[in-house]
Amino acid sequence: MTSTPHDGSPAQGAPSILCGRTAGLPEGTLVDLVAAHVRDRPDAPAVLGDGPTQCYAELWQHVTRTAAALAEAGVTEGDQVAIWATRTAPVVAAALAVMALGAAYMPIDPTYPAARVRRILEVGRPKAMVSAEPNSLAGSLPQGVATIDIHSGPRDGTALAPVARHDHIAYTVFTSGSTGQPKGVLVAHRSLVNYLGWAQELTDFGEDDATPCFASLGFDHAVTCLWLPLAVGGSVQLVPDSWDPRPWIAARDRPFAFVKITPSHVRLFERIARPDYRAITRTVMFGGERLDAALVASLGERLEGVHLLDHYGPTEATVGCTAYRFERSSVPAEGSLPIGVPVWNSRAYLLDEDLCPVPVGEEGELVVGGECVAVGYLGGDEEDKRRFLDEASIPGTASVPGTASFPGTASFPGTASFPGTAGRGGSRAYRTGDRCVIREDGQLHYLGRLDEQVKVRGFRIEIHEVRDLAESVHGVAHAAATVSQKGLGGLELFVVPEGEAASELVAQVLERLRAELPAAAVPERVFVVPNLVVNAHGKWDPEATRRLAETGREGTEP
Image (cartoon, rainbow, N blue to C red; front, top):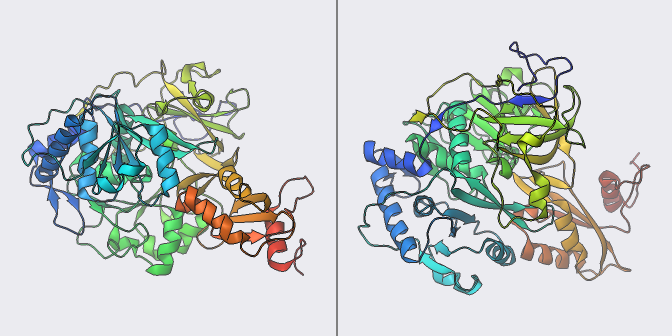
């Protein structure tokens, strides 16, 4: 099932379908892989950070103690367990403990406002909450949720025999949905192990390698940096501050295997330190946002000899479902980079409004199918039914072996026959809402969204959620938001007041948004304008509205 013949050029008249390589995966889960390293390499470094290095044996001791405390609280297979997700070794151990019991860990970013945390807990209905300060959270938890100190459990826990299976949910990550409410995305161990095996091949990660993790653990960007090293037997360096690169940018005797970074991080780090990536890492993995060629080119010789990856994927496709590998010398002068070809055991379709594949060279909605696709949304609803499909129901697709793949590098440990990877029977598919095209290079290219969803610093944000909250503030008649093309690319909000604008209107709007939204969704600038300017097609014109806010004139400045 492919749109490209073996020479890599597009097949004329073929449907726009790309296949990832069919690959064997370990029979066990992520927890089983970590346990194998505990048995075989107990003294190897596992978690690095500000404190003492934690080896695999020490990590597993903490996993065992936490699992005992969770089991005592009644946590069992199929439960959800919330984790107050600071980037610390005990949190890593807690997540592994949850998964070992066959439950799903639900990371909650400590920087989220209280109102958003409450909504996540109301939707997620966790059996327990694990935190370093559980007493401080007791008042905000739904009734019946046990609170567990992350350092609790017997000093010497009884032997832990993981019960997690491939069909158990490994984690639940909350992201914005089209309703404007947090949506809990359920990712199974099967999809997680599939992703990690593919990511290891991309990065050539070995047991002597390490990578930094500075992304929020409440954001699936961190899944790659956190779990890939531990699945392979390497090390993860936990970095406390997402926006301070100094703990990891120093030149290293052995460079990191990879650094995963959003374009927004790159722009900020350029202002702070101008990292020399040649001395830091073998590979830079860009992800979370659209990657512009100009940004890569601006890093110049500091990327010389460094392997580069453009990594794409929504949370519903298990972190990432496609990637494009390239070198600095192949970066075009302008435009965006391709997003590449699909993950192992998965397919990418470009479909029209009737969900039929469009011809190669025509744009369509990207729909991904196979092992990369999440189980669905926590609780299920109409959006679940609209977004998730039976892959076999997609018309006009032929069963042809996939050829789109990266050349093999490292071998994922313990690989074995993994049932159900060769065909499409029973597979789920996910409608991304992204417009893409397969061009002459045989790669997927991202064109934009079909809806109001945007990415800000790697976080997925529904524009209408910001707009609706702003319009709920007394004194605001209308509002509109967009992503700024300047600086770090944060949100800009334009509000039209009801009658005469009160002097404190902007402060009131920001107070409302900060109380409800993650920090990335709070606009960096709020403009009060007399009206929202529209163009000749009757659509809102952000640039003209910005000019109106800054100069008092709608037209282009002479």
